Amino acid sequence: MSARAALYLSFALIGTSPALPQAEPVEGLAEILTGETLKVAGTVYRLVGIDAPEEGQICQNRRGRSFDCGRISATGLMDLTAGAVVRCDPIDRQSDPILARCSAGGYDLSKGMVYTGWALPDPKSGAGLERQVEKAKAGKHGLWAGQFDRPWDWRRQHQ
Image (cartoon, rainbow, N blue to C red; front, side, top):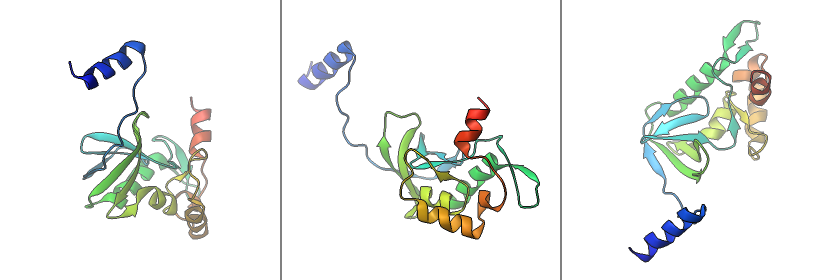
């Protein structure tokens, strides 16, 4: 048994794990799962810093008509990735799904989802997206064109 294997075995036996090396970026075409999650090269990633509506979450447009804003949010992410090679740089491999900063053709998808109004900055980790929020509000993009519950409030009410 190599020294490295013995080290990993000892960590396994005592229930801890050594620091993992920095994860390499992954590139490929994206399969969109929700407005904040996508699969690239067989691995599911969650976009860092944003929170998108859940599938089944009902919002209203400016005319008061109801729609599934979670489904539309996922469609918005599809639009941002259509035909582009997506690159995901993992930030936290311990989270499920893996938290990552992803881009399509060099365009940051978290910023794009907030700018188009189909996601909001995550209150815990979305610092730095204020400019995109202001532009989305001013342009009445996406969710800002009508009425909606913030995704974290909606989840709390529907658990």
